[in-house]
Image 1 (cartoon, rainbow, N blue to C red):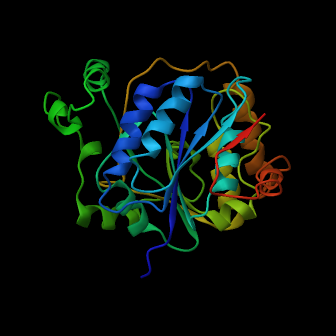
Image 2: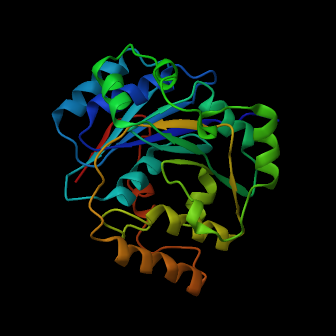
Amino acid sequence: MTIPTCTVLVTTYNRPDALERCLISLFLQSHRPTEIIVCDDGSGAATQQLITRLQASSPVPLGHVWQVDEGFRLSRIRNMGLAAAKGDYIIQIDGDVVVHRHYVADHLRCARAGFFFSGNQYNIPPDITSQLLDNPKASVQSLLQQTSWNWRRMRNLPLQKLMVSFYHWKIDYGYVLGSNMGFWRQDLIYVNGYDEQFSGWGWEDTELALRLINLGCQLRFIRFGAIQYHLAHPKSSRAQEDTNRDRALETIQQKKTICLLGLSQHLQVTKNRHVTVHRV
């Protein structure tokens, strides 16, 4: 099977220390992505300076799309990243994770037409998160030896293949992990990407998954692979969660496949996918 070209989208907001750990873990992948694009929801100058510095050492093109900080607008900045992407396959992560060395390889091994995937996440305790951020040379695996065993950070290729074949639900939205997803870019174009009517934390990724399912794509889950280690942080405001949940569940009731305010508006204005894009 031919391995597809791949863009990794990394969302971030004013957390350059975590973003640096995240990007370096992508630089060290056993199978490197075609490109990495940081999707920046309005961070300040420190994030821009970090990306400029890391662009000099990145083994693949490292892009940066940015929008003015007008609150939590994750859907919009992800659409901007999708519009700038040139990979056939999109892997989507948040900038507060460190990924396993075979993370990209696991996602691309599972990729197949008519499917999209949610990967695996292990939450790092706050004390170990602090050690990792204080010491850029600290090893995630070494520090995690201090903690009890957990299957979520276990990589096993035979079990991974077995679970991908059988571990799935047709419409169970409760297991979507927006910070660890793999999609075909063309499928995202069909459904018009993320619905930008979502603002504030929650449910925008679930709603996208529901439209893909309505389109006929199957959601599968990668276990014992595609592992990311989530750095601890305070929770975002949940003030919009109920509104967002109601909007997402309407997608089931109405059997929607396309959102009105989505990716298409950014595809129309993105002329050069290899340059930094700063948009209001």
